Amino acid sequence: MKLSIITGLFRTLGQFHQRENWTRQQLEAHQVASLQAIREYAYKHSPFYQRFHRGLTDSPLHELPILTKHLMMEHFDDLATDRHIRLQDVKAFTELQNGDRQYLNRYWLNATSGSSGSPGIFLFNRAEWTTVLASFARPYEWAGVPVDLLHRQKIAIISSVTPWHMSAQVGATLRSRWASTLRLPASEPLESLVAKLNDWQPEALVAYASMGRILASEQLAGRLRIAPGAVFTSSEVLTNETRRLIETAWGKHLFNQYAATEVGGLGAECEHHHGLHLFEDLAIFEVVDKEHNPVPPGVYGDKVLITGLFNRTQPLIRYELSDSLRLAVEQCSSKRPFAVIDGIQGRMEDILYLPSVSGGEIAVHPIVFHQVMDTVPASGWQVVQEGERLTISMSGTSQQFAAAEFAARLHKALADQGVIVPPIKVQQVEVIPKTASGKAPLIKADRSPSKQHQQTGATV
Image (cartoon, rainbow, N blue to C red):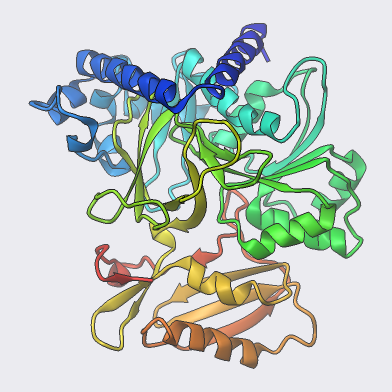
């Protein structure tokens, strides 16, 4: 890691510390000023925004049009504020390089996997990338894992090592003699992961939620023998049972995080564990329904619109994420000025659309499955919608696991939502199938052409 990155990271973290002591009024003033600066920069340097916001440059944020990932990628060249950036060149660069170099020698490049149906590519200049690094370091400090040159923590990170994945890019940037980090691919065989972790003995553990659950089961079974002082999860829905298993395994509070490739860290739990503080000094969040109307605290939204307050290379103004969040009614007892979310129930892509007994269809949220799945002693589970059938894979279950009884309970839970329950197949497997990045998604909806749906109908 270059000295300039290190000094920039610590300087940015110092700014974060000051903001965390702001009043709500100071935070909102910062948002207003930063939003104005971002909009002015975009209108001056981005041909796309000059067209997209024509006649609306003085309008309030909530009146501006929605930016989707598809729209951003379709107008990639014109949206970027550097006229030298070309999507064709970016794609060629990713094919020729392995992630160790910067595009045009000045942009850190990150790409989504496309699991939501549309891959995205996002570029950050040095200042922006330093902010991204600091956004991932902030949760460590809240958890009591200091980020400074005097405390060299041994950290194990189990995630994607795909070169252009954000976690891999962050890891590559921070790799230095000051950071003692073991990075392991979540796609690696479990036996190998356990052996390497036993040998490394990390002081902090970072993993996808599904991988955290699997490793906790290994710890409770006595095969994994580590004693991390802090455990972090991110990138997937964290169920109550997964949290319970992890905290039972290591006797430590779990710190959950919320992030997106588009802007980096978006939120995290603090030491009080009353929900995840949204990083409102880095982005403006709008939790909305499917028609993009704001939803009140205590109600899950269908999407969240984010407006980055530091992204100038690719300004993201009212950018749509398909995450379903719930703003907390009660705020955290800490003095931090940030809003809190007390629930993340997955993405819109995780919703299963099933026929309703009264006609039409009902969108069944992952939470309906969590309520049944998390009652079963298992190291992992996955629901796959295949045509007119649901296949439930369970790993780490005992020989006494009653598949028929479990299927009956799931059938009832779905019937209670008013759906015509499809055939349910329950199978016990050694491991839950993972994606190329090593994630083990809890829900895999059928997205074949015959199953494509508009986001309409009742939602449960």
